[in-house]
Amino acid sequence: MRMPLFAAFALAVAIPSFAVAAPPPAPLAITPAAPASLAPLVDQLSPAVVSIAVKQKLSMDDAQVPAWVRPFMDHMQMPETEGQGSGFLISADGYLLTNNHVVEHADTVDVVLGNERHFTARVVGTDSRTDVALLKIDAPSPLPFAELGDSSGVRVGDWSLAIGNPFGLDHSVTLGIVSAKGRAIGAGPYDDFLQTQAAINPGNSGGPLFDMQGRVIGINTAIVGQGIGFAIPIDQVKPLVEELKTKGSVSRGWLGVQLAEVDEATATQMGGKGGGVAVAEVTNGTPAQKSGLKAGDLVVALDGAPVKRGDDIVRAVGALKPGKQVKLDVIRDGKPQTLTATLGERPTEDALARGEYGTAPAVKSPSARPVVELDGTTVKAVDPESRYDKRLAPGDKLLKVDEKPVKDGASVQSMLAAPGGHRVLVQRGGRELFVIVPAQ
Image 1: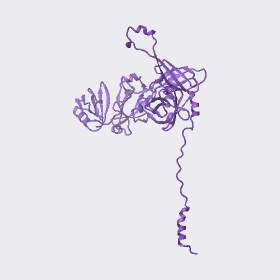
Image 2: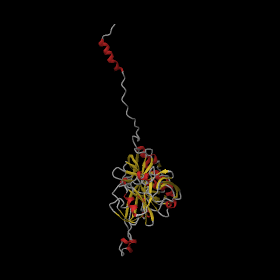
Image 3: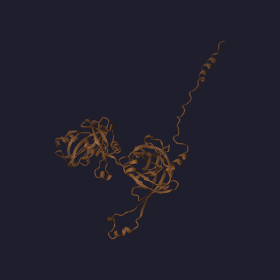
Image 4: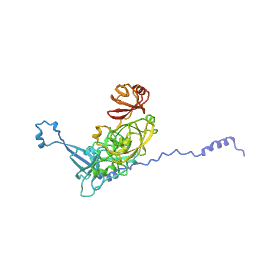
């Protein structure tokens, strides 16, 4: 029997309706990084966190006091200042960590545990460069303490938990993510902070920053603006604890060299294919000078590890002890060399302030055409509007420009007037100094 045409057409158009449509894609499964409640974790961690109250008697310099008052000063009751901070126990026998700035200059340090027990603490050791202090309290029985974690494994976006004493409100808890790593905020030569959104306020200083496993990943230290807090990575602190306990201070390796940041183009011009850091000055009698390092060298690696910034060298050397030998891969006049330096001990910050040996400011880009007045190859004056201002100074004797020895004033003017950045080796006050001048 012949099928009617309209029926066959209906059957033909109906066939596609039997096809099964693909289901819409499912949303990505996200596993929560934090539990529904942090209360069990907080209950576990809080006993190891302490509040710290410090007192300091005000003193007056004799020069500030009239002569007729001085005989009576021994009998005067001087006023006291008070301060607050936080800390955390790291051993059952009463050792605890806090910030150096919490206890610095304190005459008395009172530590209060979560159960309101008070102890007078003694400052065992301090390190102002990392802002860390180790304290000790003596208790009749073992104390709860926190486990030190591994800050190198912390990732941006991980949860972080702060417990401390903000505004005197002991054992306050705040939560936030780690929002950045490796932050430098101008606090010292070894800046390498964790940035966190967990609220940090005055009084939180010295308190612990925990991960979600209850391990300390940092020591809360600084606040910049609202909602931005900084913590010292615990990996920077752990190697210091034993030395603070036995010596009361921390000794660090030191080269005695001033460094200058260079951009990639300048490093390439100097022969460094993968970047590097320029040596601006080598101080006489220092480990750097004894190793043969010279102003104008480009340091490209330290102990085989590439260096991109001056901070890479400062931190790597500071993590080593005096007497340790390090290998420096440098480019000098376009040719690679390897030097060996035996590190000295880093001087105090007061000593360094009298002759700055840290990293020089990064070279910024461009300013105007150089205007330098010369007497032969010696600088007489520098135009304050030129790019050579604050780099060259009257009395500087020019030795090399862009690795080319200087012969006379005319050739120097030609070299300095050439476009692009320049690398100038000068003799200043009996020492050689390497100056990097940005491009026009």
